[in-house]
Image 1 (cartoon, rainbow, N blue to C red):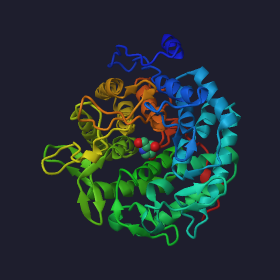
Image 2: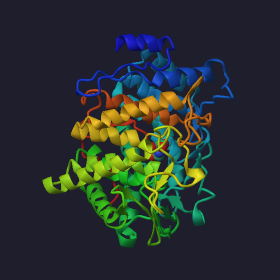
Image 3: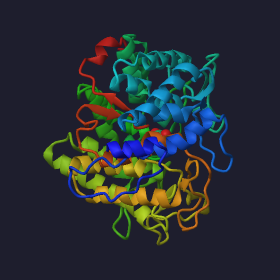
Length: 476
Ligand code: DMJ
């Protein structure tokens, strides 16, 4: 490992090495992150330019430098000390929070709470996190307390996405604040953050749910659904993830979150989970009662989520959900295995004889997304079935072969051709999530143990909270 770090420290790119895939003791994979980090972020900071041919996205969710911020804890976990210190200095001196920002994109990417937890002495991260938390609060000033999707962090003005029907807020956005905001209350002792997200939960509990399902669009004015599109992929995904993770982060005290998760999963299984003619289990989307037999790459996180929730059910229930999690993860692996690049498309379908492949040109791209390897990590940690490491290693090889570019890693426009065209974007979640999950897949289980840490939807670890957070919030 030390050798690898030295190599990586010299700017060596991607160390392809023979990895013994079998035993749990397999040495940690390697600091994959440095390739992306060194070439993209250093180019951006030091030379003050991003090569146009291999542009790295250092902005996300409206934040300049999102890649740097998003990568912080990955650098720390990979023990890349020099890079971590460099990134920390940048956060301290140059990270500007006064920008127009996406409500979801910001808190999930801000690694400060994670880093503050990982490195308790690093208070620069704590103060930045709290500053950001304060700046997000005006978005909650709506009749229901459901925040709007976009906010100017400088002025405090907020508004809904232009594309969201009838000024609605998005389930995966306002439903993906819970972990971060509770942690902000923990960090600051200020109950206001917990109050805001507990109020969101209250609104969601109260509103009638069609067939027990949660549609993706809710009015922040009336607190009613605006249209009936249900998806465990884009627009809905992380809301479900945060229910089960809220329970885990509360050290299993937050039984309300667990109940909401259990009920939601039961409705999803009843109405959306299907099996293809070829025997692949998938989760369809639902549009006012009509099923769309499509699964997005984003929905592939659900294998890991269901496995994580299954760990805590009774024996029979646990086995049932572990089987479901394994089947969904297998389907997502099939979407990779059936492509020429061995990387998966943005969405794949199960209709007209198609199984786990994209049928539309517009769905053939891969933008370095993490969800499939995310599920491999949870499945590996919870079953120790070696196939999950083998599948992860297939991804490592495919990334190296098809996505590696001069300045880091790039998405590709078509996974079904072996001469793919690069999109010249390195999304910030590639460092935050994809590389971190690949790294953890080959680590021992006690590196960020699932007993002690909960990963937020951007793979930033937050500590399991052993105190009773609800006592700190005054919401009835
Ligand atoms: C990440 O930014 C987060 O995981 C988010 O919840 C949705 N997915 C992207 C990466 O694909």
